[in-house]
Image (cartoon, rainbow, N blue to C red; front, side, top):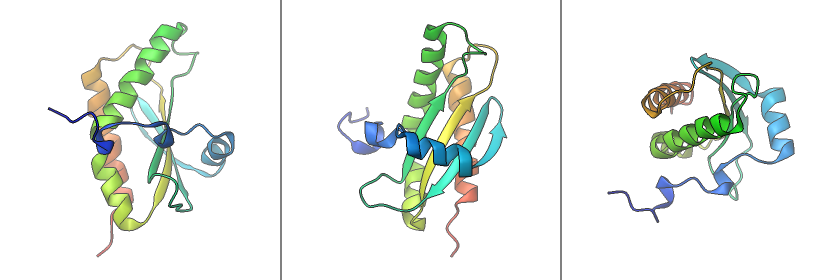
Length: 136
């Protein structure tokens, strides 16, 4: 069973992207790729010892899901899948000395189940690991 006090298995506010300036930089200067049903925007920021290696932003467009309860459910599923699978990315970026801001934008039309979200988040993580692989 997971230890709820283990900082590697939680998603504190410091790991969530909420600063207006950081979000503007992410969308203006970030690079994107698409893994259905996610559009992923990644911005490599200047390393700061006060900030975590990865900060994420989750977004579900109102155009796709009219009801707030549906949008919030999808965002909760995305955050939970990220929280449980983020460790390899954080370890890789710490080795590389890189800090990232990541936007996960859900573009699907139907309410997904957790297993689909988990599978797709794993695909996103795999792509991030390939893009930021440490060269030996």
